[in-house]
Image (cartoon, rainbow, N blue to C red):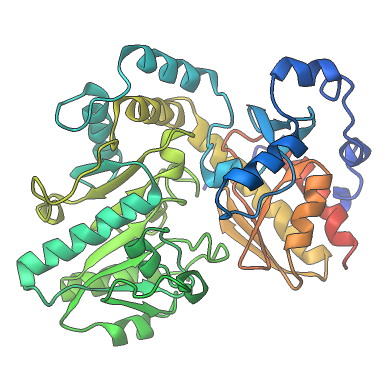
Length: 441
């Protein structure tokens, strides 16, 4: 892990409640942004009108915050009324380069003028180049492209089952996943998700999945049978409350899979692409999976997913066994190639690592200061603050202070800001958290 430069290091215990911009946050009135001219210039509906239209025509699948976002720049977003917010959600860990990164915008625009979509009946240069780049950066030999994390996990499940059944026989189709995991909303990825509350109303689920506690090697080993095809897990449970594995756990899981000829699948949809301080989270643990899934940050905001595998495992797929019409289209691949360029060549990976350290220290200080906080945990710029109280009201209070965060598992505030966030912006987040936490401690 990198280290924050000395001029960024400070004792939060003595400064969290005295930042010079405290009042600035509490009353974020901006005469330019709040002006009618700004609102008219953006040419859009205001929030009440948009909310009414959305309620009338959209299916009721989301509980939305009462703002409509119309513009973004860097780590800041603006609502329909012209108010500015610090974005620590980043499209749920998607916008790793922030909003409207000029190099990414240029790459998307250039590709859109040239070729957007062809289907996978033909070769395209951006797709092949992106596959090559991902292979060079990871353990993998082969890549399948799709459009989302759920699709990537669906591909991983199908690939593991087909590989195992071809090699060991048709009975070897069982997959072990973790309690409180999250793998997506398609039927197989939903079944793989170890949260019963998300399964309600969707029975019968896909057979052959079994759930074991995360971080419990004995329980995992006890569930292995001759029919176990794969073990699927997130290196860090993000939706499950930012749960970091114990030292040695993932390495022991890898050894278990090797010993029993079981496919190891890492869902890195949220932990990949620099989110934890390395390009992929598995690189922290001195191991390699057999299959890895990516999405979210891979396209910097453009939808794309990927299922990566070793050459041996990849033989499970043949022409006709799996496909995606839009998967690996030129536009998405051109965006992902530029994201990788910026991460690796533009120094954003190292910057994100340092800022992650800085955020982690600040959150740890909050946990020490306020009795309503249980503890802080995380890795890189995937951080959580577990509370002893309901976290949802705090999300709304942070919104009032123009900072966007979210809450998972009811009591864990989750922070997944862009990798380009600055120390000053982290200070702004910590200041607002101090305000809302101090009222409850």
